[in-house]
Structures are given as structure tokens and as C-alpha cells.
Image 1 (cartoon, rainbow, N blue to C red):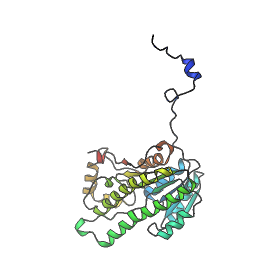
Image 2: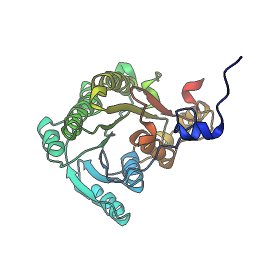
Image 3: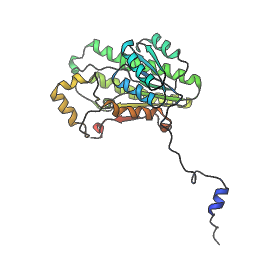
Amino acid sequence: MGERLSTRSEISDAGPTAETRRPKTPSLRLDGRVAAVTGAGGGLGRGYALALAEAGADVVLLGRGSGRIEQVAEQIEDLNRRAWRVVCDVTDTRQVETAIGSLERLDVLVNNAGTNVPEPFLEVSEENLDKMLALNVKGAFLVAQAAARKIIERGEGGSIINVTSQMGHVGAARRTVYVTTKHALEGLTKAMAVELAPYGIRVNCLAPTFVETPMTRPFFEDEEFKKDTLSRIPLGRLAQIEDVMGAAVFLASPAAAMVTGTSLLVDGGWTAQ
């Protein structure tokens, strides 16, 4: 004779199991957390900072100049969140260690500071090579290292988001140095994710396509370049800052609790072709 099937009441008496318990969607809220954003004075950095504040985080704004940071800080404070203004050159080890080390708490880093000087490969100057490697790679490394140390101090884990680019997954003419730096960050992210996982620190890349910002706007004054760029994006348009803000909140939040060592492409389909 076969086994008797359990009744609903018997299952209830036994308590919920993984099969019967109703799963609950993890929160995208960041209440009670402190997030740091480099390059926070404008463009994508400003967008990330505001997105994290809207999700409930207090935000540490790092940038080279105080004027633009002050404007972003005021907007964050209008959201009833705290904002700290920190003037810091992320390529300077001592400045980075002082800026991050002096924080009382850190849970999230958006490692956003970077630059690009498009030049044909055969004409890349050593000055621009050094400039981009220093900011895009060395600066990102120094900030990530200092942030990881600070997060480990509390022992409660956290999230580090290295902002790369679709160019960290492909190649492109006139962008050999930029592509080099973004591929380097993609590799750094994977290695960090493995090494920092025992501390509960998740490390991921956020890789946008071309976003309309003050840095990219001059590129699109060249109509031929603009036409070629749009032809490579299946969604048929450039990204806006708002298109990337939600991705940063997701990677920072409990909703991404099992996401580490990967790259979230926000590229309109560029790399799908």
C-alpha cells in the first residue's frame, strides 16, 4: 500500500519549509547605509549619488573640486539624507587613505571617477596615456582598496561597484587607452570579488553605453560619429543618466545579495550584436 499523502493541516503543523514558504522580494532600499561616490560632482557621478540618496542612503561625495560637489550635496540634503563633501584626488594615495579612512562607516562604494581622451592609437601621447592609466586604473584601485578596508572594519559586508563601460567588453577605434583601462577594471572586479567574498563584500561592474553627459557631449558634435554610434545601439538612442541610476541602486542593495564578480551592462544592446 502506498504512502499516505499529507493533508494541508499536517503541513501547516509541521511549519513552513523551503517549498511551502512564500518567498519575499528582497528590498531595493538602502536605509541606514552610507555610500561613497567618486567623481560625484557631475554627470554620472551626480546621478549615482542622487539615486543612492533616494533609496535611503547617506552619501559621501568625493571629487576634485568643492563647487560642484556642494551643489550635489544640497540636492541630497533636500531629500533629507546626509551628505559629506570630500575634496580628494583619487590618484593620490595619502589623500585617498585619509578621505576613506576617516569615515565612521562605509557600506557601499560607487567607484566612478574616470576620464577619456580619444586619439588614434598611433598618435596617443605618453601624457594622455599616463593620465588615463593614473585616474581610470590606479585611482580606481586605490579607492577600492581603501573602501574594502573600511567595510571590513565593521564586519557586516557591503557592495563595491566599479564603473566600467561597454568598452570593457569590446574594442573601438580612437579609444585604445580607454578600452585598456576599462578591461583592466573588469579584471580587477573579478579578482576582488573572489578575494573579498569571505568578508561578505560583493564586487561588480556597472558598464554603461554612451551616456549624454558633459564629458561625452563634445563627441557627438561630430555628426558622423553620432550616426555611427546610434547605429550600434539596437535600442536606437543614447542613454540618459536616469537609465543607469537604477542599476547602481540594484547592485548596492539586498536585491543583489547573490550577485558578485560580474558586469551589469546597460548598453542598449551594443554588446549583444
